Length: 329
Ligand SMILES: NC(=O)c1ccc[n+]([C@@H]2O[C@H](COP(=O)([O-])OP(=O)(O)OC[C@H]3O[C@@H](n4cnc5c(N)ncnc54)[C@H](OP(=O)(O)O)[C@@H]3O)[C@@H](O)[C@H]2O)c1
Image (cartoon, rainbow, N blue to C red; front, side, top):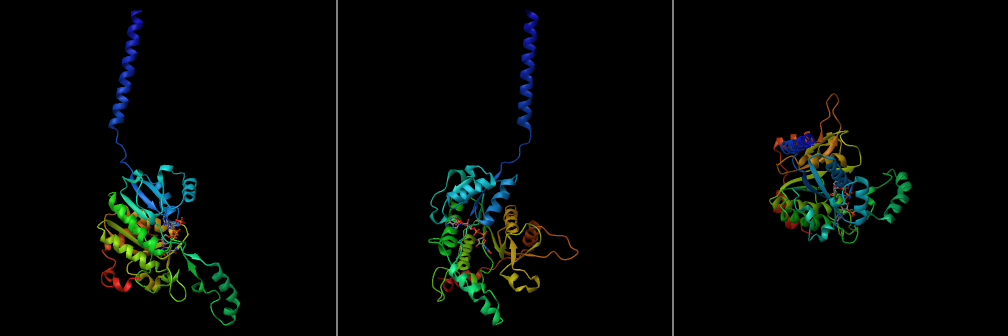
């Protein structure tokens, strides 16, 4: 009996020592740093979805996606398998509150935008005109003759200006340090074709998307927050990293005809957004994809961004200080 007692006691002591050792070792083991929370707005949009999904796969980041509707939320959960707590259904034009789940966010990536809708009637008109254009030796399909509108309450002034300002204000309110804004190339030219979308042939109506975007960019710059403003050329749904990313400022890429490119893959834009999270330097830049020069190695989007930041080149917004009245709508 006594021997049995001694054995039981010894065994219990052994178990306790084991337990102490393993929890002590666990406590001393190096832990990975907590994930950095990043809000991605427009997370159900074509670029936003790539940004959100890439951050989900990342070891360093914890994304929360803002989407406009319940149905977009459902689709995003189904396709990315994210947690429900990582989705925030909200219209940025009515952004007066935020859920507690984003209170620890350290960065915000804005991918919302007014979305132009093509009027079907104008498409039919353009198609009917095609044979006549061919006979006259003109371009068969004239894209610029198509007419566009925005959905009720979803025009550029509401979404790209007021909606973006609301997002920037929220970032400030909850202590976010860095805002990354996906905007658009062409902002230096008030007469850019994109500004005519949503207007009638007399120039009336809700348009001027690049002007409203640029005004919101200026608001972000003046906010005192760290900022990265990305102006992509035409967006394409092509795979990542197939071509190099060329970065420049002030719409110079449009003038550099030797590049022979005005577009970029949405996936490369998403990579630039995520790479920007690693830098503390505020900046604004334009970007397009260009062919990899023969005999050279491909350069990653991250490397192109680093090279641009090291160059010290800055985007010129001085026109926004001087001609705000002229630009006023
Ligand atoms: N398309 C191009 O070729 C091009 C070229 C250069 C730059 N860009 C710019 O690049 C950015 C990304 O473009 P993208 O084509 O990838 O975007 P996109 O697919 O058009 O997505 C825009 C997103 O914004 C959301 N949104 C619109 N109004 C909202 C509101 N009031 N509240 C919350 N969310 C709202 C939309 O949601 P709903 O769908 O539910 O409305 C949509 O998910 C945009 O700023 C765009 O202007 C585009």
